[in-house]
Amino acid sequence: MQVPLASPDIVSEDKKAVMEVLETNILSLGSKLNEFETNFAQYTGARYGIGVNSGTSGLHLIVKSLGLHTGDEVITTPFSFIASSNALLYEGVKPVFVDIDPLTLNLDPGLVAERITEKTRGILGVHVFGHPYDIDAINSLAKTYQLHVIEDACEAIGAKYKGRMVGTNSAASVFAFYPNKQMTTGEGGMIITNQETINDLSKSLRNQGRNLSNEWLVHERLGYNYRLDEMSCALGISQLRRIDKFLEMRSRVAKKYTALLKDIPGVEVPYVSPDVEMSWFVYVIKFEHGIDRNEVMQKLSAKGIGSRPYFSPIHLQPLYADGFGYKKGDFPITEDIAARTLAIPFFNTITDEQIEYVVNAIKSLV
Ligand SMILES: *Cc1c(COP(=O)(O)O)cnc(C)c1O
Image (cartoon, rainbow, N blue to C red; front, side, top):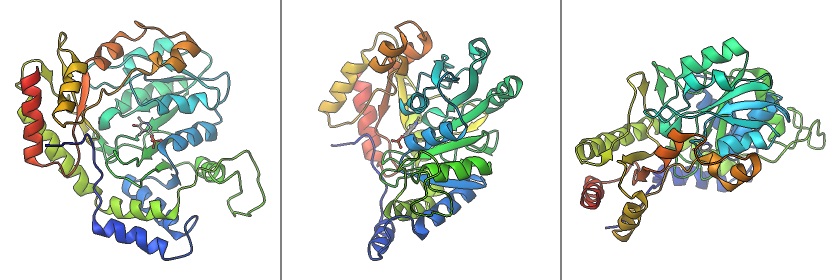
């Protein structure tokens, strides 16, 4: 049996929506962009949505719109996809890492204060694997020290913290729609914010620095081409219509995995804080010390089962280790957990037979 690690959920109405765009002449900067932004802002409860061509470009535009620049420091987590930290480097901002909470795998708010200096301008939090970070604690630190908060919600569409939807608890946040995310546009991302200045600046910056009346040859500032095309927007609109169903299906898969895996010795299932409602992005198990995670991964692969270590610590990537002098031992919790985690096949349409096949394979290998 073949069980991929991830798979998008594309149905005939998605295909029809994309085909309809292709039958018009307008493949970029048309009405679908506006419609996707409006629907997405409404879903998350934000005032503004800004569609961009990836989650990474969305993060970059937030950093830039907040006026962060060389010499500034922003506190963030080393246990994330590399884009959350790279977005700071694009503007010469120094990422200052703090270690994570071993249960939620999110940035530990208790470790933030000791890393704040006179150069600290913000905190970039990541809702890792769709589990919200401790929003109240982070926002209270930000208030005390007068820092911007940037919310990387790329893995957490629809997740809730104490009943509040993620994304609007910060200056601005970003969501991502790569094919392995909860919903997809192929490539794509969405910034949301309640601040008019961030909205206006982001919309100008994604479109070559043009002003908002879109005079084609007037460029007010150094911008980029971070636009999201109309086919992607049409797919996004169609996928967003089914997001509640998607999150429900993923939650069902996670529950089934947890029920079948929780009593297997040597395997630890994901922790979910009572304060949150997960938006399941991936299903990541932890092996006990002494189990060779990479060997399990290879043997799963031989059985046709996709799996991947999630994540590899950012501070140990050559770019960061060589560039900033980070080394092994700097963030021991992150390093210990990153060596033992494994994402296993997880997608909306995974069948019960596939889930059981994966679980039995893991059981036989540990
Ligand atoms: C997916 C993701 C992003 C953005 O990824 P893109 O591929 O650029 O859309 C950013 N941060 C995190 C934590 C992610 O998981």
